[in-house]
Each structure stands twice: as C-alpha cells, then as structure tokens.
Image 1: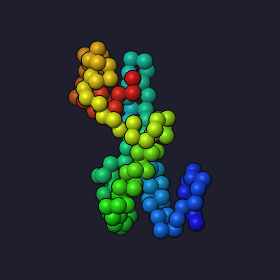
Image 2: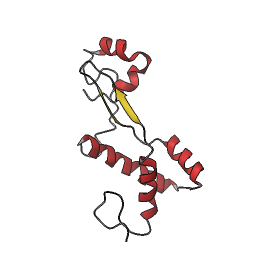
Image 3: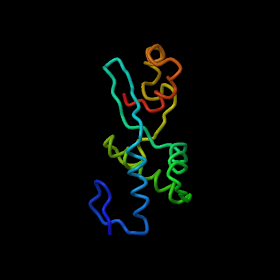
Image 4: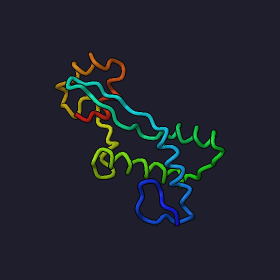
Length: 125
C-alpha cells in the first residue's frame, strides 16, 4: 500500500489515485488575501468544482461523483487542519456582518468595496 504526502497510515490501492489527484489539485490552489486594519494575512483557498473540472479536462481524468466528493472532503479536512479547527467549521460562510455583529461593516466596505460580501463570508476576525 502506498503512502500519500504527509499521510502516516496506509492507503488502499483502490483509492490511492484519489490521494494523488488531491495532491495535484492542492499543489495549484490559490491563496485568499485578507487585508485588515491589523495588517491582514492570507490563507489557502478551497478547491472549487470549476478547478476540479479544469484539472480533469487538462489531465484527461474523469472523476466519478464519489471521487469528487472525496476530493472535496479531503480539501475540507486540509483547510480545517490549516486553520486548526475541527472538520466542518472552516467553510462556515457567515452572513454579511455576522461575525462582527455589524460593527465593522462600514470600515470593511471602505477597505474591500465590491469584495465585501466574499470577505465577510469567511472573515477570520
């Protein structure tokens, strides 16, 4: 049985290709940059269905619906580990002003303009 990058357990040969695919996709992921009043930062962006479709087209792979679900689950686990949170807490996508309870919306609107809803949906602070 093969071992995936950074994986300490055994990977069954029947699903080894999904780990390989995930590593390929993850290696091309973008970063989301959040500028803030405290300096800001960046964090890895989720792998989107569009990116999976583009990768599949370019590499001549044809992942099944199950394989795509596994790729998305692996990505969720990757992002949760990156943020130091349990799986399922990362892609919360709160409503506009939900995290700050509306107190910072005007300041953020000045900083982010048309991108405010996207930034607010994943606001880390």
